[in-house]
Image (tube, rainbow, N blue to C red; front, side, top):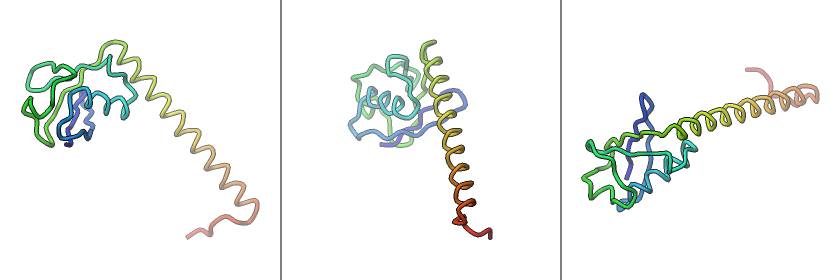
Length: 113
């Protein structure tokens, strides 16, 4: 089942088993955003949902929205995860640039279109 997890203005699509629990939603958010489940609260139909509750039993259908609230520690984790992703992206760009420079020096760079 696909659900849309809304956190402020951000929207994230997660996939859980059809009989998944709200804990499985938290686990999907952890995998996607790097925020531990202990720092998350999930709100569906105006109520905070407990981890063992089955999502479909709460009335959720594919495509429904679940609101994500974070504790103060969760906000810190989110910021750290974002910094780590940005650092990795920057490092990858540097590696790509170095590869292109080396290929140009070796004469193996692709021809410009």
